[in-house]
Each structure stands twice: as C-alpha cells, then as structure tokens.
Image (cartoon, rainbow, N blue to C red):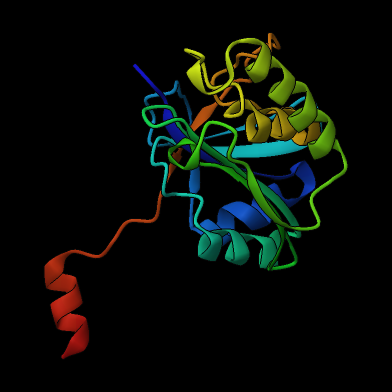
Length: 189
C-alpha cells in the first residue's frame, strides 16, 4: 500500500504562528500515519505538520503559512503514481521547487527558482543508481527519492521514516471547524 501524504515544516520557533495561520489546534493525542493532520517537533529544530491529504500542501496554503512564520519547506509524496515534490517559501513567496513526475519519463526532475546546490549532488547520485539498475527498464523509481532525500537533508523529515532515524512523536491536530449549513445560511441573512 503506497503513501499519499503531504507535509510542511517551519522552524520550531515559528510553530505557533504556523498553527494559527492554518487555524489548527493541538489536541495532545498521539497520532500515527492514519491521522488526517498531525504535528511533531523534530530534533533538527523544525516543526512538521503532515497530512494524509496529498493536496494539503498547496502553494496558496504554503504562501499563507510562510507569510506568518517565515521559512516553510513542504513535500508531497504520492507513491501510487510515484510523484514527489519539495518546495520552499520565504516570507510568503516561493523561492524554489523540485518535482518528479515519472509519467514524463523515469528520469524526469523539474525545478525552478534557486534550489540548494545539494540538489545536484542528490540527483547525480540517484541518476547513477537508476542507470545501474536498468534505467527506464528498472523495477524501482530511484528519481522519486530526489525531492524526498533533499527534504531529509534540509530539515530532517521523511514521511515514511525510511531514513533510519527515530520517528518523532506526532500528536493529532484539529483543523478549523466549518460552520454548519444552517449557521452559514443565517450568516448571509
């Protein structure tokens, strides 16, 4: 069963601002990967918010959170189709992005803005592995790992915990409640 998740990370000192921008409340209840929204402080000094909704980390939402909290890193993984991405926003503006979409070819990796130099090192290493395993004919998509490993290198988070590090303790986050239909109807009157 493949993962379909997205996440965003802010410096731990910006945790409150990020949660307020999203309207989330910390419940204190332990959360596993099945929780719709969860948060955890990482040993690296980042606070990560993850969602099993791959569409959670939209550029619009990232811009909003970044405007309130400064630097935001965000990743998406859709293992069913092997799409992965990583983005960075600073003070509300997207500064760079990296996306792997294998339907464009197993070696597809598009990027924009000014990604860190580390991207080239990770890409070169994983392209070599992909080629040594059969390139387009390989049974595994190693290029999928480029945005994932870049995220690990920059903030220390990997949604599947596959980097061998200890999984942080996630707690469930409660999203803002949407007013009932009746409340919305009466609000218009």
